[in-house]
Image (cartoon, rainbow, N blue to C red; front, side, top):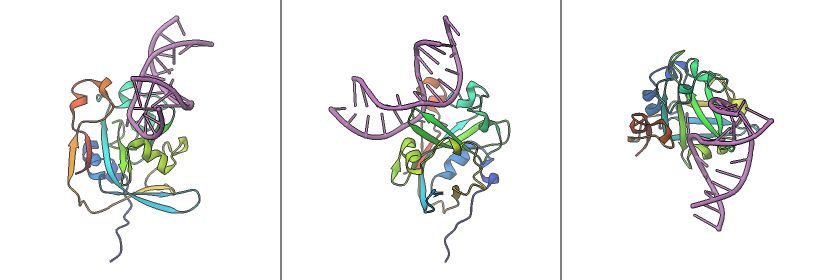
Length: 173
DNA sequence: AAGACGATCCTG
DNA sequence: AGGATCGTCTTT
């Protein structure tokens, strides 16, 4: 048997954000490093950020150079620097003009969005990269497998209700 | 031009 | 509990 190495395309990402967030748990993130070596990681935790109405979503603050990529169709990378230190990895979701994304919060062995970015050596140039064609970052399909639990999102208290209570964080049980 | 602060992590 | 560290957005 050969391993399943089906690369996920725009048709997977350009769907309902919460659905994509849930389904991304267990999928395989593949990073080709500048030195040429390849590492594969199982995605263990994600969060959904759902459109301009979701006050926890950066796009709710408006269309700016930073949030621009989220307004496009699903399948591209949204990265941003937080606390002057950590690059957060997001996958843009949904159709065009519906600014939403899924934050990759954890990979097997690398728990936490800051650790994910550090491990993958993300930086500014990943902004807008197309997951369908990028030579250095891709996501491959994988069997559903593990049980997945939903919980409120982390670090978004400023958004208030009902956004703080939405169970839009997904992780392996 | 200056200030506030963040979808975090590590150390003490 | 507090510091690191800086891009982005808001206010002057």
